[in-house]
Image 1 (cartoon, rainbow, N blue to C red):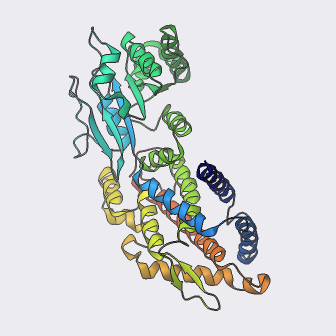
Image 2 (cartoon, rainbow, N blue to C red; image 1 turned 180 degrees about the horizontal axis):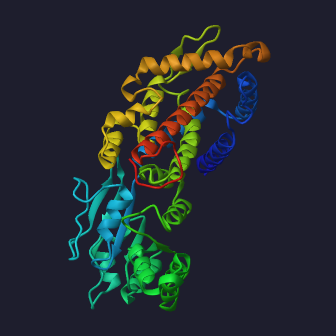
Image 3 (spheres, one colour; image 1 turned 135 degrees about the vertical axis):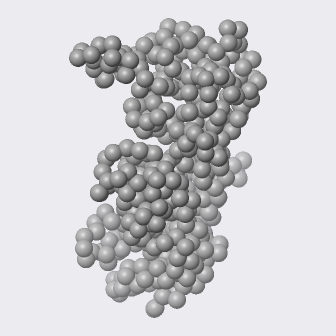
Length: 432
């Protein structure tokens, strides 16, 4: 009983600590020459908070959460009628083109006989499962869900096109009855719009047509007993258009934190909005990395006048991972180059951050020492006796915020180059 209460208290403190850290921004007060003022304000905030906290316990918790991020699985079931575009949707949302090695097989005939998993490129823990079609006359949702191992999946995406069918509602009701979430996707909406444009000519309105389709799907689901259905209109050929970002936002809200994060990071860089979200999440992740870097594996760093420790190996692994998260590793750049029909060196040519092959243990250590020197200059005289663990934490946060901003800017430049733009803009396209 006592251990349980103690564990609960520890979990509550850990939640509070993370919430506190994520409200901080090292650049919140930063102007051109205010690095020291910023460092001092952050130091005071963190030190006062850590006065009531076991720092080693904090580093241990941070290490556990980072390890959990590496092992978190997300399994997404994609189902619907034969020919509705299930496989095309799975390819599109993963940024995979038909014919590529990882592509799901597509066709007007049912090509899926049993649940078939498809990993996201570079993120094997995120899997989309192509389930057998549901269009037969004697469709029985309960039997179907049993046969496809219903409990395996985090949520379901039901794909429909052209016509709403009773089997969609039957399946949705059964999913809700079994306490799982589903999202109804009306695919091929670009074809619907083209048909409406040809039919109505000058009176055609894209917004009105989309709203009519959306409301019709929602109404038919509700009439057939589905409560509060979430309906999204998509095109498998232009996945980032129409309701894609609403679908993404909804999934982010509905998923637990770690699964939400791995889902976001697994997405190709469809738009600048995706990249902005990745940058924000990576900055939050920076605080965990900074905490964990002061724990097991930390080594003494030769910074003048102070004795600091940091796990440089963890920082190295994390930095390389950030390249991958933003589509700047070798594999991602090669995929983007093939997509854009450009030499990969042209994409690398617009990058201003260090090449990933140059990011070594020595490189990270020297960068950390340089950051430490800039932050600690004059700070010792201001504070007197420093809590060196807190200083190490602040230095790492500063360093990684700079890394994230530099890589984000590079990701925008690479994206603009791939799309044939002079400068990063607001256009859309699936890159990396």
